[in-house]
Every structure is written in C-alpha cells, then in structure tokens.
Amino acid sequence: MMKFDLQTIIVCLGLQSASASICIGDNASPNWYGSVAYPPYFTRDSPEKCPQKYGLSRCEQSAVMKDGSPNFAKDNTGAEVCQPNVDCYPTKQNCNDTLVCSDLVNLKQELKKGGHNIVCRHEKTYWQQNTGEIMNCHIEGNCLDSEVKPTQRQLQPHGWKSSKTFAKSFHEMGIPIGQTFSSPFSRCAQHAELFSNDPNEERLELLYMSAWKEVLKMNNITDISKPNAIKWQAYNLRNFAGKRPMPGKNNIMVTHGFNIKLALGTAVDEGYCMVLKPDESGPSLAESIGSLTVANQVFTFDKDSFPVNAIARMSPESAVHMQTCDDVRNDSINNQDVDNVLAAYDINHDMKITKDEFISARGSLGNTEDAFDFIQSVFIQPEILGKSREAQSESLSAIELGQFFHLNWGWREFLKTGGSISYPWRVILQNTIGSGGQTSEDRVTAFKQANVILSNLIVVLKDESDYPSKKIMEDKLINCNKSDSESQYLASCAAQVFLTESGGPSYFPVGPGDSGAAALDDESIFGTPLAYPSKWKPSSDLYESRSLKVASCLVTQGALSILEISDLMGCRAPTTNIGVDGEDVASTPKVTKKGRKIFKTGKISKAPYVKKSWKGRDNKLR
Image 1 (tube, rainbow, N blue to C red):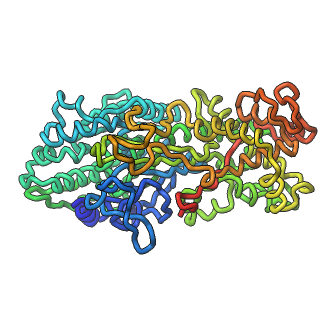
Image 2 (cartoon, rainbow, N blue to C red):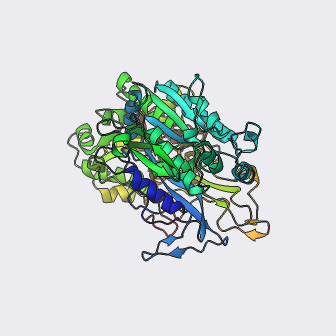
Image 3 (cartoon, rainbow, N blue to C red):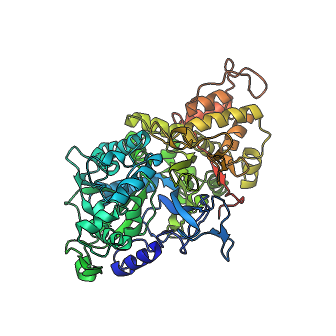
C-alpha cells in the first residue's frame, strides 16, 4: 500500500526534470535501489537516488523482522532485504554523516543569500510515548485537540537542546530566517519556535499524515482510506516546499519523517533537515502538473509553487560544525599566522589542501607526492562511508581540513513493544572539526586541537632524508614498535578530542535507549532475546585509527613527547610513567631538538586528528 502511494505520488508530481529534481527512490528505502528495507547496519554504498549538491549525510530506511529475529532474506546480490509491512516493520532512518568543512563553508555562503526552504523532521523524541499516540489520537481522529496534544510523542531534552544549538548557530552566523512553519504537533512547533523570535505558524500542510482521519475530514474526502490522506498530505508538502521565501530569507518548515519521505522521496532521521531551493527558471507546478484527483476531491497546485533542487541534508550536528569551519576559515584569512601550517598550505582558504597547493607550499622536496598520498591514506576520506566523489574530481586530489564522520544508526523493537523502545547506535568515527564552543575563539582552538596530528605530520614529512618514500613513511609512522601504554593513553586522549566523546555538550551519545528503559544486561526484553544489540560500537578489528598509530610512532621516534602531544591535543598530562625510556614524563618531559623545531615552525596552537579505516559488519564497508 505505501509503496504504491509513493510511486503514484512521484509519477504524478513529475519530480524528474531538467531544471530541478528531488529524490526518486521507493518509500521503504527512498535513497537506494529496490522496494526493500535493510537491517540496521548501514553498510551499503549504492549511489543515492537523491542527488544533493553537498553530500553531507546519506540516510536509508532500516527495518526489523516481524518475528523478532535478525533473519532477513537475501537478494541475488547477497544483500539482506525485506518487504516493509509484509515480513518486516520499517524502523529508524539510519544515516552516515560525512561532513567536511569545504562543503559546510560553501553551504553557509549559499544560505546567507537566502532563497531556501529548510524542511526539517522534528528533533529527538521519547519513543516510549509512541504507543499512547497511536492508540489514542490516531484512532480517535482528534490529534489536533489541545487537551490531546500532551498525550502525543514529545521532544526529549536531548532533542530540544540539539535543536536550540542548531538554531543558535544559524543566528550567530547571520543566516537570515524569514518565517517558521510547523506541523500542529507540539514536537514540531517546539522545534520551529527556536529559530525566530517571531511567532511560529502551525500549518495543516505540515500535519502528520498518520493523523489521516483528520486529514480526510478537514478536506471533505469521503472515501475513508488512509492512502487518500497520505496522498493529500504528500501533495500538500510538495506544494508548500516549492514556494519561494521572501527575498534574502530562508524559511523553516518542521514536519514529520513520513511526510518528508513520501512527499520528497528522501529519508531523514529525527533532527535532520533537507535544504531545498525552489527553481523559478521553469514552469510552476500549477503549469507542469496542474491538479490531481484524490477520491472525490481535486488537489490543485499553486501558481507560485515550483520544482525544488535538493541542496543538502543537514544532520543535527552540522550547524555548529558549519559555524566552526567558518570561524577557522575567517581566522586563517584575517590573522595570517605564519606558524599555522594548515592555513599556510590551504592557499585559497577553501578548507582543503589540493595537491597543487601541497606541492607549492613544499617547494622542490623530492618526497612531496609520496607525502601527499601518505597523508591521504592516514586520514579517513568520505568514500569510507560510501560518499561518492566521482562528480567532484578535484576533491580526489585534496586533503580535507575538518571532517566529521559519524554513524547514526539504531533500531526500534516491535515484537514486544510495538516500536515503543528505541535503541540508538551513535558513534563518531572521526571529528577533526572539534567539539565546538561558546565563542569563536573556543571553536578555533577546538579545531586546532583536533588537527594536531595532521599539522605535525605535514611538518615531519618535510624531512625527506628520513622519509624519502611512501613505503618508508608507512614503515616508520604506521608499523613502528609502539609502546602499548603510550598508545592506550593517546587513544584515551583522542576519544575526548575527536572521537566518541568529542560531539560537544548537545551531542546525543550511543544508548541506552529511552532513558535506560531499553537497557538490560541480558540483552532481552520481557524475556525475549533482542534481535540486535541494545548498544553497539565498531569493534577494534573493524575500526582502526591510522592517525593514532602515527601519533604513537612520532612519540616513539622522539619527534614529540607524550607530554607535548597531550598538551597540544588539550588533554590532561599523563601522571604515570609512560615515557619512551621509562622516565616519568609528567616530571621530566622529553622534548628533542627535532621536536622543538617542529613546534617552532609548525605551531598549530593545539591540534590532533584521527583516521578510521572502517570496515563493515562483514569486514568491508560495501
């Protein structure tokens, strides 16, 4: 039923056009091939069917089997698949986030000019309230009654704080907001209200399509069937999202995941936003589509509604990271610090170092190309999480400055709780943008702390006598005989600076789901084993940090002391004896002549980085 609805909607809306386009996938898995849903492990790298200008995040529909098992069928390629609402239930929209500063600063400049509709799914909610909403107002058809709204699924504190941080970053960056609109559901209205001091306008165009009885009643649709309401609301959102904001402004529209998925064909998790730009260069939707029949009623598209271009999918963390990237870029332009290695190499200040820039900054050194290739191999690149760069050939020979690679996975339990227990799996694979901060200075410092390893590696590799080739770089800086205690300490420091603990004060971490209600030591619920783990993180054999190996090798070789690197990364100095030759590094730090030279010519005022070579559940991220 749902599959038929989306396909009908897509065909009728004519979403494929030369001037503007939106996603064309199936509703069950709108960004991928086939009318299927997948297990919660997001390991597919198929091309996304929603061609966005900036590939910040990719999301897909995960599912759980109706029998409560993890036993999916396999298609002819060996991929695990299921038929939503037939043998499995659609569950969380799982996302792989691949934020890079070069994309974020460009997107910020576009948003500053206005002209966009930013269509968001409401932020994180209490899923244990889901059953009450479904069994109450969805059945009774009274979701809009004021006394019923408190019984609906509400924003949880993590969600409110995250949306407030997002809106605050937009405000501080000067991104102009025109009007804010939301679904009448309180979780959407509370989210939208944070973007402006002007009153938010609740709009029926954004009403949750699960309130289908009210949709039919308000529009006098006499054929009482859920598909009719779904079609009507999909047309409503598509029409509303195609209306251009006031000149120089961006409008905020906060609605629901199903509405976005069925109207626009793109999956979004809670708190994610689609940045859409109405394109007035061609016919309006009134001219190109006109009207569509829904039972006894006719939906007519407006003359001022146009096709839209999908510019980006923004994760909840993307706004504060955009702000940090912009601060760092402005700092490098305005301060001209000769000791800032990354700024010195990023000649045009676009937050990435191309091979030409790298060669220009290093002069005639004979190992330059090998050094560039080695650095790229150390620091995770977007394609590790399936982000295609085929259409961005210039990026294939660039080192991105500032990257946030994040797994936002998870699942909901249906067998015993009907989807009311949520298990979030959220893991930061790499964060060289930093953890943000209240001021520009704080954010720039956090960025530099998150890039210590990269900036010092660039300087170390200028010694072509020690590092004449990529093979020797690999031998000395990856495969050296490292101290286990030093490696353990650096891993702990890295977790704070740019890994699992680096998301900042508004980051919503991995489990336990729903305030602990879902976490049990025996991995069962009401005596039934869970289909998937309640908590999940990549194991060490799947997730390896090459940059931490580099950091450990630099300490082992005496290029840096453990005290120096921990101080630059912003961690507390170690208090145990883990020095290279057994000396107490806390009282007798080892700073070699080479180490002094590095920090004299390559001072980054604090900064590390970490490469994660992620391999999927079957040892390869496909």
